[in-house]
Image (tube, rainbow, N blue to C red):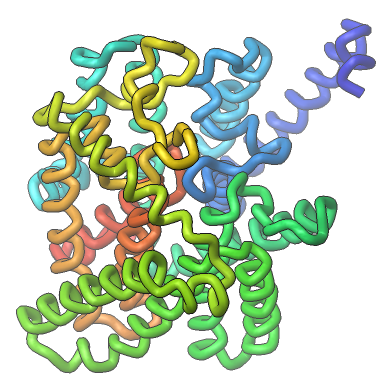
Length: 451
């Protein structure tokens, strides 16, 4: 089909003309129908979030071409770049009638967010300026601009939508990824661990745990849709099992335990609630490390997990040494893991001695953040994270479940999934939802909620 279209300019012109007609028609109706404009905006956000799902984005067409991360890759062709940018411009054009109203108070809201959440703002500023100290400044600049675009999309979603609106959008995006992953995995080797459309079994399994938790909550709190929710919960749990990741099963237990813990936390004063949530997170980290690293019987026989964490801990000290060589600012965004540079790759010395495996990343989101933005970047993220936990505890006490627990659920998921994998910062759904959570909590706890 692609060759047929490119072989005849007339066919290409005809298809472009039809496309423009459809765009103009949709633009006209979106301008006269507020509900249609709102639904189109949600559709665009759904497609965008699916494309960046997981830590690296989805791997199937057309979503992999829509991921803004492709704009940073040297292998990306000019038509893909043009198509990627063009589609986002078209989306902006179609919903511009809605944006005229939703962007009116943006400066005021942004100023409020910067004042209430300065740590994230300074972190974003570091991201954009990191090309100044990167060994590959042009690549870092392109990547940092993509990160900024993803962050701005997240800021808009967090500003414009309440948790009551975000929750169903989040659930349906996840189940679409689950269903597409089923279709993709059933095409492959029936005996292999599933990675679905997310590229790697660990990231896939983590995502399935998140999806299962969302639909479990919906089954509990929405009895009218309980059968549907249980069906989607079952799909997510089957996919989680097929992923073969022991850490994801531990994560599922942690998330369920956290949800049960909310009833106790809501009864406490804010200060004690904050302390109890932090202690829960620390205990969860300790249990996760204990199970996945030390208990061979549990890991191999019960969780069906290979003992790969030990291999990771072999090269983690080397990575810490690398961070300490550029401790304040790091190597810049995407400035460390650069295998295409060959011998000049700063990460070429990171090798697992026992297997000679050369990792593509740190297998720890916090270490990767340290490599990119130094200990200053890690500190800013940590301050932002604890600030968000404090706000999430306040929000939990003010609001009814299940929406009241979503911020803490997201923060715990972000923390736990970055202990043995990466994705803390980037053009991915983990970073996207973290920014959404930060913005939404800032507005909800400052009394200046827009939605």
